[in-house]
Amino acid sequence: MSPTASPVTVAPAPTPPVAAAGAPAGRDPFFDNAKYLAIVLVALGHAWQPLTYTSQAATALYYTVYAFHMPAFILISGYFSRSFDMSPAKVKRLITGVVVPYLIFEFGYTYFQHWAEDDAPPEPVSLTNPWYLNWFLAALFVWRLTTPLWKVIRWPVPVACVIAVLAAVSPEVGNDFDLQRVLQFLPFFVLGLHMRREHFELVRRRWVRIAAVPVFAAAIAVAYWSPPQLNTEWFFHNDSAQGLHESAWTAPLVLLALFAVAAVLTACFLAWVPRRKMWFTALGGGTLYGFLLHGFLIKLSRWWEWYDAADWIRKPVGEVLVTVLAIAMMTLLCTQPVRRVFRFVMEPRMEWAFRKK
Image 1 (cartoon, helix red, strand yellow):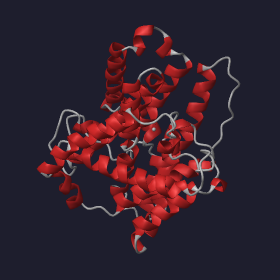
Image 2 (tube, helix red, strand yellow):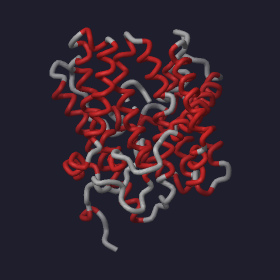
Image 3 (tube, helix red, strand yellow):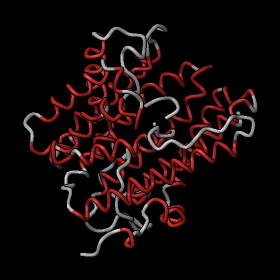
Image 4 (cartoon, helix red, strand yellow):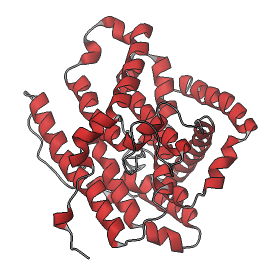
């Protein structure tokens, strides 16, 4: 994910509405908890990015989060896409829950920028060039459509990894629909498609929970003391090796290494996700709302230079405050009142647009 882009389910995968009081019967609190915590990490990554220019500690946390938060989100999205079968009901849901929000937010983000940046030349609306966070909806649309393919072929995850590597050495892929990201993140979606509930149970073991602590500590330490010449643009999966001014032969090595790191950190993250119903469990059903809506505030903070309003913002106390505000912002945007206001955009009822049975 790029510094100007970020997931969550995850990304966030669109899920049925849930009651504000908690997860309804039939929903597993673990997955709602995981989606909420993953989307909070998305917000933290975006909020910490401006702090990386002056704080090595913020930089270490930023790159640690970016190493796994979108893979974790996409894996969960794949897990909840297992039932997609190109049936009329599922295609209808894909249109109303992914395509329509994509179109609305593509216009919304563009005209919001026109309003917020009076002195900037207006950008034209482009339906083939996802604006900021809209890349995830484009990716989810492609991934969902290809779900039947991944269900029937042999060795789906290795095939998806090969496709990701081929994309990373092919600058000809281009930027339409952020196809580089779509293809380079594909292995995590395919992996999620083929996971079962018992696979998630494996990380509940006590030794995994204990091991997660030193693993995350080591990841942060490596990010803190990483050499300056390290090309961190690889983390965002939005360009080919040639586009990053790297040799093509490095793409397989770097991508497979990043996949391994993301898998380990995702397992550690899931190991610490609560299994029982928590105060934030119901918020897991609103992660797509939080993901797309928080983009307006994140962009506004850049355009209006909030981080330069006072020197103390880039001091430790300011970094803590930014962290707390990012968590509060994402939590609020996933709540039931916000979802009721924006449901006509995110989950529109469009019976008029479809044939009756």
